[in-house]
Image (tube, rainbow, N blue to C red; front, side, top):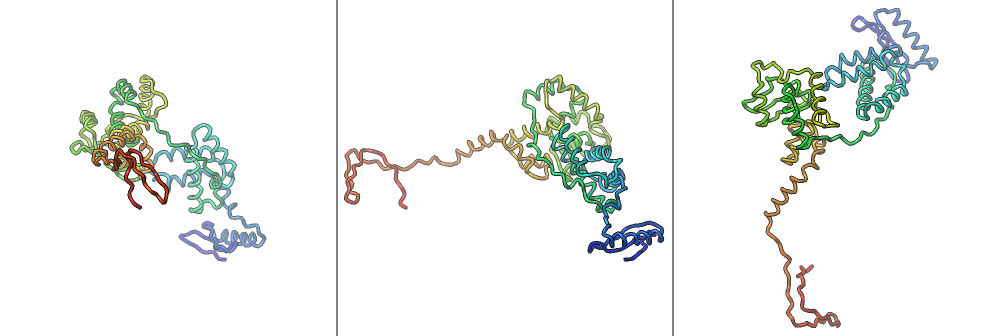
Length: 362
């Protein structure tokens, strides 16, 4: 057991339960001596419980550190809002006082008022916060979220607009959000990608939209359809740094909700415009590989959700293929009109006038 100084701070070094332990004390050598002596006594008396050392660290402290060192660098902005929600729930409690039952109760409440997938994402975040806190030596207890089992999520929701619904939607759309909906419907871009798009990443000469930061973490290029090209050309500005669609999210949400009500469309979200693009693209082309690239899916598994919609296209392709192979008929042997006696191992069999398929000898 020893005391050492590192970067102006005193540490203690000792062994417990066969494992080497290092504990940061502070700027007082005397305090380090006292804590080391205390640890010796705890180990000798079997009262050394390292998980209690950080019992006073609040969840708010570790969540703030999590956001500063890790969370703000995550690609999806939704993690920020989820972190705020879990911090509002557990922020005033010491990290060591948060039990498995506390997290299970929170998880069950989320499933009841939101969805299983929402609850699972919050649980994933909680596990990550505790794991990072343990790795950074902010918290030395067991991860209480690790003992919660995620419930199985229902199949992915796939809602898209029919041609009739599309006509009603666009027919009642006001000029303020029409270009936004058109961009989503012609590209399959996510709402965040659409609303964050700048003219610097739109090349109307080459008819390409560049997505530099996507959910998958990989950049991608989206060809601009002719109809969308006309719309974008009519609103283009001179400054590359300008947003293509300078509409506040709250305004978009309000206008979109009013539009759905006016068009008589229920159970539809803005993200379903992405599903609408993908569904009609696959029904028209049947090209899953191209669709995966346009949507920016990291795995073809996500794109496979639309595979069943391409059945009509595949039937048409099979009909086209059918003409490539010559028609094959089964060769036959005609037997004359006179009955024929055939001796088969002492037995007589009469073959009537018939057509018998020729069999290939084994």
